Structure formats: structure tokens, C-alpha cells
Image (cartoon, rainbow, N blue to C red; front, side, top):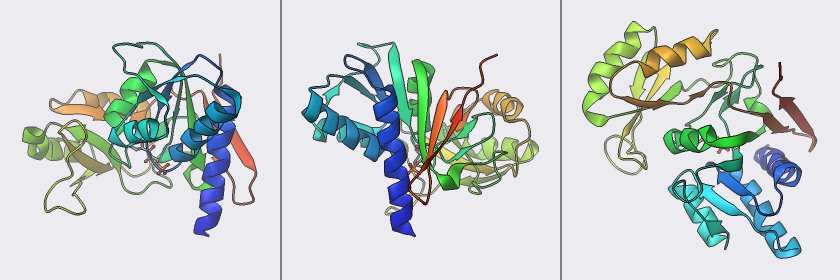
Length: 237
Ligand SMILES: O=C(CO)[C@H](O)[C@H](O)COP(=O)(O)O
């Protein structure tokens, strides 16, 4: 079972790199376990074809992947315009809206995605939904300024959510993000209008960013259990 999930993730990671990455590009490198397969493919292509790309990280984890893989590290002040951002997701709805932040890296992930011409998502079959909240039951990750977390938990309840302060795993107390903030995981059940919910949450003082990525993804690869690939592509009107 676990092995089938890893095979599915690998399939998605390789497909995204092979379809979208070209020599000379500036790439966003997302975070999480599926992105590792995309980075491994980049490293492979660098060695095999002499591919040269600049990689903009979205977290401490992705910085490590880039540096340890011998890829060229850049940042947004040097490269404010990214060609393609490859990232993972926790859930994808039928309109390619995403829940992200399961790994706690949503703020930098959203900044990089916002400044990318294309956002390509790599995922396995468990992430493919019709409606956000249908499969991802841990709530929407929301990065908040620490001093505001209690009033924000109350505000989230007023919006109809059940908020939980994300705790660290090997330390007593809250998880601290790469940016020094806390994360609230807020369960809103199934979300019929994610755009509206995102706007309401972003109005609250102390909210830094939400894990709702609305209308940002261009293409999503879902690796399947049988080793094949499923895809969702943004409709252009
Ligand atoms: O948003 C993220 C981290 O903040 C990840 O991309 C998301 O949690 C998916 O991770 P994985 O590929 O390990 O399932």
C-alpha cells in the first residue's frame, strides 16, 4: 500500500518535470514528500542532459533539497519572475482550487506560486476531490501571528470553523513555521465557495496567509495506484 503511494508520487513528480521544465528556466520548488521526486528528476536531468535551471525554494526543506542536490539556488529578489513552480497539495477540487500547508510551508509556497507564470501540482490519487474538505479532514492550514492566535480562533468559530492550534511533534507547544508564526488548522467541513471563504479569512487581522490556493494551479498530475497518471487542467475561458 505505502509502496503504491510512493510509486504514484514518483510518477507525478517525473511527469511534471519532463513536461514543463526547459533549459534556462527559473523554477519554484515546492515542499512536501511528492516534490522530492520532482527534484530528483531535475537532478537526474542536470546530470544526463546538462540542464541548467535556477531553483527558488518555498521552505527550509526545499532549500535543503536544492542545495544537497547540487542545483542552483536563487531567491525572489534576484529572480522575481518564475517560469514554472512545481509543488504538492493536500487536496485538489474540480476547479483546481487547492488546500495546501499540511507540511506547514504555505506562506512561502503561496508567494512563490503567485509570482510564477505556471503552477504545476504533483500529487497522488488520494488528493483528487470534487469539493475541498471532502477528503482532507485536518482543516484548512492558516498561518497566523502568534500574539493573535486566541482572538483568531474565536473569529474562525464565528466563520463556522473548528480551529486547532497545530502542535510541534518533538517539542512541547506550538509548531513554529519557517517564518516564526503559528498555524491554525480550521475545519470548515466541505467548502462550497472556497474563494469567498478565503476572502473572509484574509480580512482578519493577524492572519498572514491561508492554505486555500484559489485559481492558481494550471495543471495537476495525480499518480495512480496502478502506475498510470491522471491529470486536471485549468480551463481557459
Ligand atoms: O503544502 C504542502 C506543505 O506545506 C505540501 O505540498 C502538501 O502538504 C503535500 O505534501 P505531500 O506531497 O507530502 O503529500
